[in-house]
Length: 262
Image 1: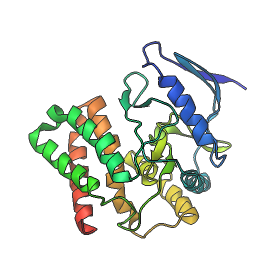
Image 2: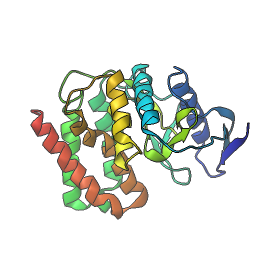
Image 3: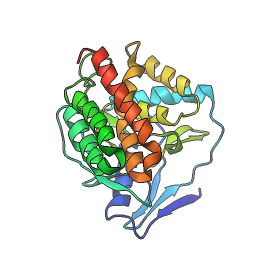
């Protein structure tokens, strides 16, 4: 067995501990492959080296079902983190996110994730852009996306938290999770991040998920609200290139909330 070491002497204190704790928490239910942690230090993380294979439709469907089972394993609250500190973003420029616990999703998502980030990027968004973003956050805070497609109320799910396609490695053992920002969240967070930059066989992943955990027919229209944090984070990390997409997503959130009667 070979290993892979992530290291960063300038990484924030607790960064590697948080990643290790997140990987171990995601692996705990034993329902989806997660890269094994071999050793953790204050400025490094040693992981098992994964051998990649080409993705396939069958592997994608199986991963979708596994992801649903991971979400169903649950978390103790929204915003809860398996480590005292939590981070989002690449190793060379992560930013800290809150780990306060919340009983409901809207409060966690709007007040601990979206508003702090929107405030950081006000100058990049411009006045009109910030107003559009703020309006979308308000409708999320009002509970438009508390459930799925306006139905019910979601319980806290065990989510990866940064599940864009680059954090999903296809191996002989199946699609394997790496680089989490794990926390108690809404199940659509992970599905939305997979859609943000187009994971391979995305529709097959969704098919596998729905076979394990049935969803309302128009659930994909909710994804805009759950990829919003990822987009705002990209504006914060990478600048103006993502502003137009973030504003268009904010407009889609407001339109979807209106469609749902909020």
